[in-house]
Image 1 (tube, rainbow, N blue to C red):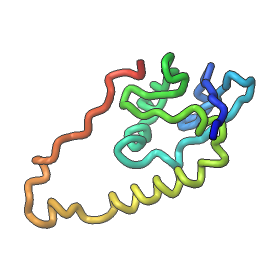
Image 2 (cartoon, helix red, strand yellow):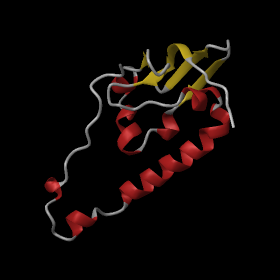
Image 3 (cartoon, rainbow, N blue to C red):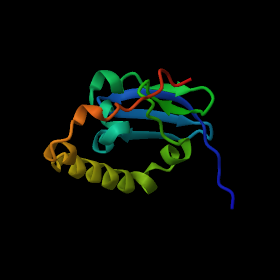
Image 4 (tube, rainbow, N blue to C red):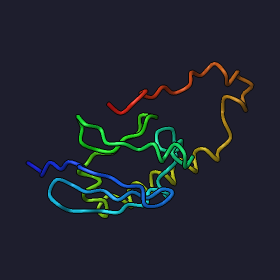
Amino acid sequence: MSHPIYRVISLGLVGTYSLRLQFDDGSIREIDFQHILEGELFGPLRDPDIFAQVSLDPEAHTICWPTGADLDPATLHDWPKYEEDFRLAAQRWRNAMAQPNEATDSGKDSDSNPAPVGRDSCA
């Protein structure tokens, strides 16, 4: 089974959480990411200053952030096909974060859990 390989060739910030992406096949897509910015990977991007640090990864040919977040260029190219799944995953993260922290509730020291580590840059 084969599928097309797409590359993001340019990007522009068009809103607080929205990007305009151009692909190597000439197509252009505007995507509002606001509703998927939850969880350990995408949650930090809710800070508009961090979201605005988006850049193109020259090796993977996709968008990425200094926090380590990135998305497959094929997913971005065909975003309408995947958007609902990303929204549902974000909702699950939101619901999980709303649940009481079991480590805190059981009296365990919550500081013993290491912080997540991200990449320093996209490249």
